[in-house]
Amino acid sequence: MQISTGDILRKAVVEQTSLGKQAGEFINRGALVPDGLIVNLVAERLQEKDCQSGFLLDGFPRTIPQAESLDEILKTMGLTLNCVLLVQVPQNIIVERLAGRRTCKKCGALCHVVFNPPKQAGVCDRCGGELYQRDDDREQTITHRLQVYENQTAPLVNYYSQRGLLRTVDGVGEIAQIRARVIAALGDLVQ
Image (tube, rainbow, N blue to C red):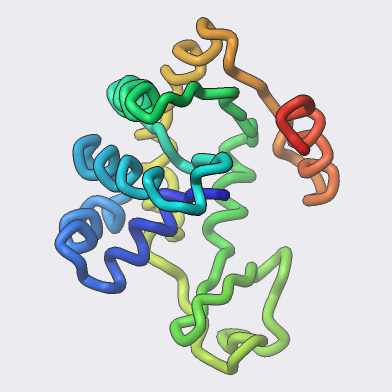
């Protein structure tokens, strides 16, 4: 089961839950959601039935304190972390990929203005809804998020490398190539 903290947070923002209202302020600025909020969200999510046979965390942890909290959460569940996958992509490509994303206001479908453009500009191919650029996909926000990454998330590379859990993949190229690299890097963990 893939658990994307970004997806969970965006859903909470759209649904205007208490957590969503708090998180929305941080997300729209390109800042990290405070550790306490995100840790509680992940801890709750890992208790759900679909996680009992395993899970992949996407976008978590993003700080050393979150990683330490994850260790504690897993310990209480009687689990250990198998590996951490780092997909390396140059910053200019990250900006191009994220800034080109468009989301349908109606059905939530994603497209990309360069890599997967809609048949008609601004219109969702799936449902005909209006496409828009999320605030967190704007170039200024992305650049800020990359600075936050360097300051707060990059130290996790050393944290997990020292524990022998880090596996690195080149994230540049066609989707099929990157997917093959990911599967190769996960090797023994992919069934």
